[in-house]
Length: 242
Image (cartoon, rainbow, N blue to C red; front, top):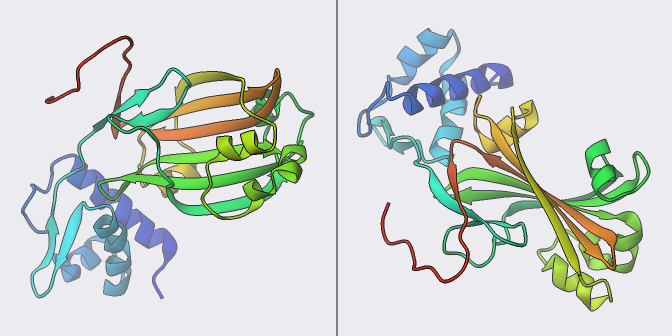
């Protein structure tokens, strides 16, 4: 059986090599035998370590030829809208995302503070992973107080819904928003989900209020190496080139 620690090391080191340009686009990675010798592991562990790189679009597997380097994914433009959303440029909504999970848990201190609740208050969390060109670029967590989720029961279900519309349908329409942007090092779990290695992350906190009472807190954790930020106001033309 492949060793998870060893296969993660293979993934991380080869990803860094590709991003650093040590393997040019169009070239092939060393053979499985050579990589097994480099990392001191069995060939099946090498194959397990290469699988995430295929998923990310960094390499492609060509039968009887090996793993061809596709090149590091380029950064793309995102906009930070006036209502605090982070959207790929030119898109009107974020999209449903993948791997939707819902769970009930105690809120961390920062979320409890944003929701103006007691320490370790109970919240329902809706989590998704967002990808661009097949590569993870953002993690989204949508937190609602348990008292709100008890009213808007749809938010506790692992199905994609328009959360703000669901709140409005239960007389909890969002009447105010507050957002904040910061940058920090990624946690180990965030780096694994975003497949970002040592890249820092942007964290965008967005809190929605109904009649001055917080009804949700959204956290977007974004790979800093995958996006560049733009903002605009008034009447502007569409971006047609770099």
